[in-house]
Image (cartoon, rainbow, N blue to C red; front, side, top):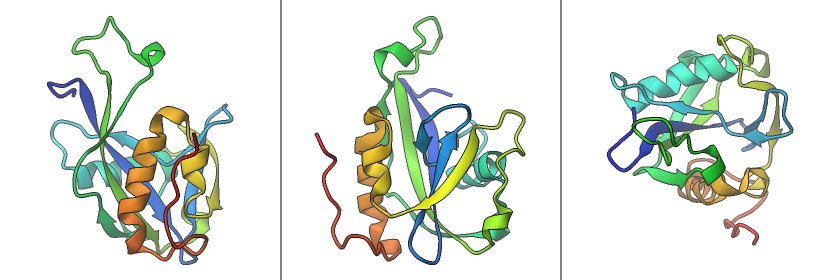
Length: 168
């Protein structure tokens, strides 16, 4: 499903632990790390997509987490030109995302990266709250910054009191 502006609706998923750290996942077979995310199907609400993607990508079910909140509006990023599939119709130029902040109420042992038909991640770790802003691929940095800044008040971020800018 692509909207009239060329953006695919998506959910971004930030899982926090009791210490205010965030779950950082490694893309399968790559040295690329990110938060879990996934598309919203035409018949789904963003919350339904959140729980489906959470189960498919990292093995967590609804009872393993508590929703702390979500972004007020869509956050958008454009795909680099090399990732745009110009032969596809409708043309997708990027993603628009609703970001959710979750608290893990289950244990680390509940995380399972191999439940989906095509696993997306082969590793994970807990990181300090602001760490992902400097580590995610450059075309997603602005969206990560916006999501982390907007959702920071939902948890205590022990490493910084104020958000910092994405380095140039």
